[in-house]
Amino acid sequence: MTLGQALADGLLALGHAAPRFPGADNRESAAKFLALWLRAHNPSAARTAVDHRLHAQNLARFRAACDLLVRGAAPRSLPPAPAPGSELVDQILALAAQGPRASAKD
Image (cartoon, rainbow, N blue to C red; front, side):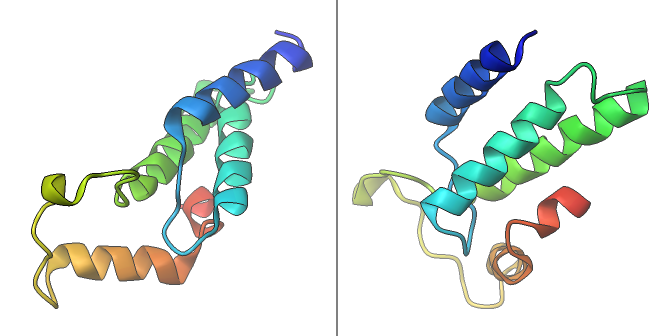
């Protein structure tokens, strides 16, 4: 895979995913997604199967964190607000406190 093709595929994936990491702006979320996507899909960067799996897990964790925020949802389709102190609220606050860079280290 050439660099141009990899970048085009990554940008296409970015457009489909439209990630929004809790606590980060759109530009930072997009840059982080693209970096993680390129590492996960670069055959020369994954020297072993373990490396490939770790890069794929980092991308999956980032996507899971971004999925906590619903983009463009109509007000009637949103779930009810979670109760203060619930597990979901704690998870969102912990992810926002870590910032987008912490997801790649886990």
